[in-house]
Length: 316
Length: 225
Picture 1 (cartoon, rainbow over the protein chains, first blue to last red):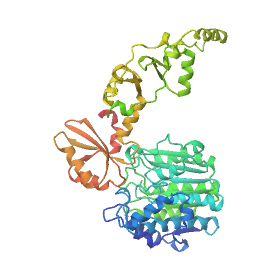
Picture 2 (cartoon, rainbow over the protein chains, first blue to last red; picture 1 turned 60 degrees about the horizontal axis):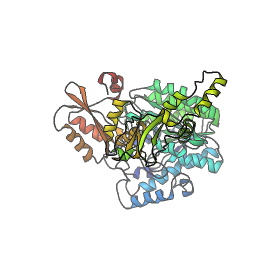
Picture 3 (cartoon, chains in turn orange, brown; picture 1 turned 120 degrees about the vertical axis):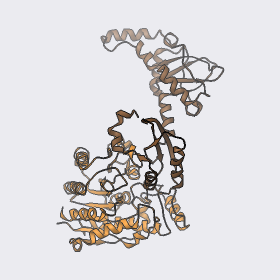
């Protein structure tokens, strides 16, 4: 049995996107309630959310962008650049809290206080780039975590697995020239889904060529297609890259009941995926794995998806 | 949508006296496949393609010594001997649509762009045209593609666009497939947003059929889109 950390904070609920936006506080409450009501809850080790140290934030985001985001946010504007990126005056602080919580989970894993962790955060992060917000995302928590692990702990190879149904264009772009961070994403085919990137031929550039891998899946596909891609693409790639720590961009929006996508992945399909990722972490990184919530919009299904996810982290 | 906006303006050119061997080197060094041939005053007189050059090179199936001999012979040839004189060119005021139709008709891969005096001022290739269309369609921009089946009647497109703008979503592009099903058209708006669920719901409430991507990619042969 693993020592599993769990990061959640009520401050993340203050990020108000308005009544008609799918990235709602109710999502996080659903995730939390699923985990809170599980009989394994008492086994979880709490990970505090805290405002991120700007030293780490700036390993990924431009100071100009950070201050632009803060300024627009405090000005009372209701969105950043696009209606997708809705916000309220608390959004900047909530986002700092989320990023800081993820970094904290990484620290605890590296200090050996926990083996792995699940960070129930919002806003999500994987569409955010060095100097832009996109697709409900403002700061790229997973990218910041990867840089933190490298700079604070000397980790040489970080593996990122992103199974959110949308391609993590922000994360890909941040690391596409970097051979020390392997970015793997499985998502709905870009012709049929936001943001329109993540095609098979996007494999990284320059020194990073071969350290980005995308598995686009056509609409309507289910667990079987995901399994096939994991076995054929992800597993051999990570077996050869040998990541010392694995970060997971954990989006539950490929679920069959989630109306943000046309994928048909079942609850069991998600369990299978995280189990397989845990095996890779065990094989190459002594089990070190930090999973970070991205999308997932089906309030009815989120409790069971989150519960199963964490249960597997404990049991793997 | 004019050729002058999408053409390459810094064109690599050669003269009719350039040797065939030099032309090949120039083509390789600049990674181009078409070399317009111009006079000193800039007037276009011909064009040479990589295929023209390849056809005068000795075949690699020849024994090495014969290849050498043939190569020696090539020194005597200049571009004048092999260039195409009847060049299919295009005017800067022609449109991208003109260029596309001209490609379909002539099967030429690149058109020199010449002004009314016959002076070369640019070149536009199939690749440049593809680039122009990628831009027009917004393929590089993050967004979500919708597919909507509509009756063939006046005003349908307006209703759809109204919903999109009321939801404050930027429209990247909109394509219309005029023949989808009998008496039906398909409209494909490319929305520059992730959150399109409200637009989808509103369109469905208005009675529109949204194309199920699964059915769409399975049935793609039948509709010819």
